[in-house]
Each structure stands twice: as C-alpha cells, then as structure tokens.
Length: 380
Image (cartoon, rainbow, N blue to C red; front, side):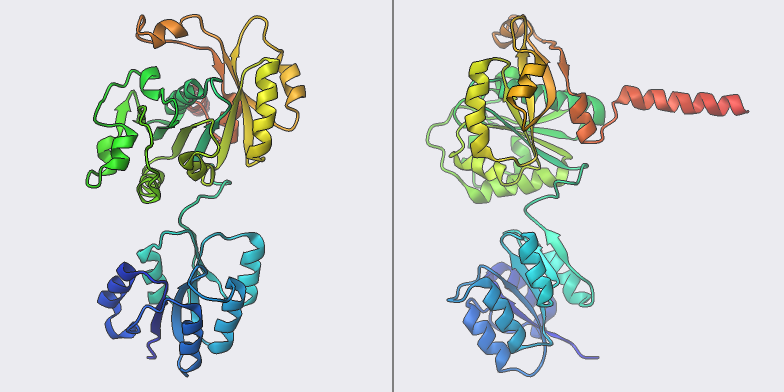
C-alpha cells in the first residue's frame, strides 16, 4: 500500500505539531511559509503529496497563479486549500484546476484535516467561520437601526418570542458598545458577567459570562470606554455560541464603523432593521440602509401608535424592503424600565419572521397533534 506523504504550508505551529504526533514521519519536516518555496519543493519531488496550504500564504504571486503553479509542479498531488473568502467565481476557478477540497474561514479545524488525510478519496468542503444563509435551522440575526429606534427592545421581544416557540436554544448578545441596555430591559443585574470583562479576562471560559433567565441566554454589556477590539476573543465567543445555540440575536450599535459591529455584520444570516413609523425615522433609515446594502435585510416597525404612519405608507416609503414585524407602543414601558413594575407586555406581530425561519408556534403544533389524534380515534 502506497502511503501518501503530507506537506503542510500554512504557517501554523499548533497544526504542525498535532499532525506530527498523529502521522509522524509521513509529515514533511517543515511547515513551509512561502508560496514560491512550496512550488519549488514540489517541482523537485517525483512523488505525490497531500498538500495542505492556504491562499493567504506569504508570496509575491497572487492566489490564482499560486494554484496554477502548484498544479504544474505536481499534477498528482492532492490539495486541501484553506481560503479566506470563497465566492462562486473563485470556487469555479478552483474546481477547474482540480482543487475540490476547500476549507473557508480563518479557523483551521484539525478534525476536518485528519478526516481527509485518512480518507483521501473523499471531498471536503467546509465553511468554518460562516453559516449558510439558506440553513433555516441555525441563524445569526443582526438587529440594526439608527440611534434610539428601539433595537434593544426589539431584540428582547424577538428572543423571548423564539424561546416561546422553539424552546431554550436562543442567545441574545448586547453588542451595542455605545449604549448597552439589554441588562436593564431584562432586569439582569450581574456585575461580574459583562462582555467587556470577558474581553479583558484571559483565563475565564465563555460559559462564565452567560446569564440565563426564563429560557433566554444573555451576553450582557455595560458602558466601558475604549474597549480594545479582540478578534481572537470574539471569534471564540462566536464559534462557541454557534455550536451551542440555534438562534444568535445580536443587538448592534448604530455605529457602522465600530469593530464589533463590523465583525458581526460579516457573519449574520439575517438583518432586521428597526424603523419608527414617522417621516424623520424613515429619512434617517434610508441613508443608513444604503450603507448596509441588501444582505438578507428586512424591516421591523417599532412603536406603532395613534398618529403613526400607516403600514401601507411605510411599505411605500421603504419599497425595496419587506416589513416582517410590527411592535405596538405600550404605555407601561417607561414604568418597566424605571423599575416601577416587574414585567411588561407589548403587542407585536412576528408571524412573518416565523414563516421566514419555518417555525410553527407550539400552540399550532399542539393543535395539529390533537387533530391527528382525534382523526385516528374516529377511525377506530
């Protein structure tokens, strides 16, 4: 039996060490860190390799030329290619050059690599950092809008509505770095579990900063000036939550240049943009929406009350976007925020959102079960 050797060219000491432990002398002694050196090495060898490399490797050639030269250097070698971002055009180019084993994302999953090495005839395509926007079973939902339109209130209502319909598989993150308010809206008082403490703490695990109440899991935030952006920490948080929860709801800042906002906007499957039903809010929103683009974006109208614009008018003013939710103004909201009452009840309509995610309410599920049971008993 011919054992194919492994050539690593990604510049990752941890992966190299783990491959060495598992495959020993099958792995070439060096993790090559330059495109030109990879091509030169393969050109000097007659045998085929499993080449594990990436399109962001150092070098003076572009990523497409790199692939073409790899193929010329060693036609029989099999390539596992780690790409930063995979577009349809890029994927077609790679397929045309017989590169079928593609891992998208900045995180390298060791189990995926070993699965392919142990089963070299299999095809690997895996997206590590992002999820498919067509996967209705797992969603990352960004709640956006201009300042003071009710993003946090909407995030809270949506999280509670999802828990009511699908169970305790929902996490709500307060990523509004300017004016966090999820803790106040949900009466969550924990001085040692704020997001900025997670970012600043090198040792504590993610689970130590999660708060659970009435079925919803929260990552709260508190005002913290000049919090340094940590890609590594927030990336760990994202992957942990994506693995453990079906719905991630992100209450975002109105500042599109905030690093945390940019991080989440790159990963969301859906954006719900909050607009108040008045001309001023609509005008501000249209300018903001232009900057956001049209990435699976829908509108939720918040604070509908006497004197508000009609929904038909809102649809006309925001004709490029679909309105999927309506929240009606409640007189007791101020009393709740200020602690005068312990709970609030707002009227809202999220049926369109449920349809988007193919969610049936528990009541409808129970009615269907009852109907089926009744029909079966009638047949007896």
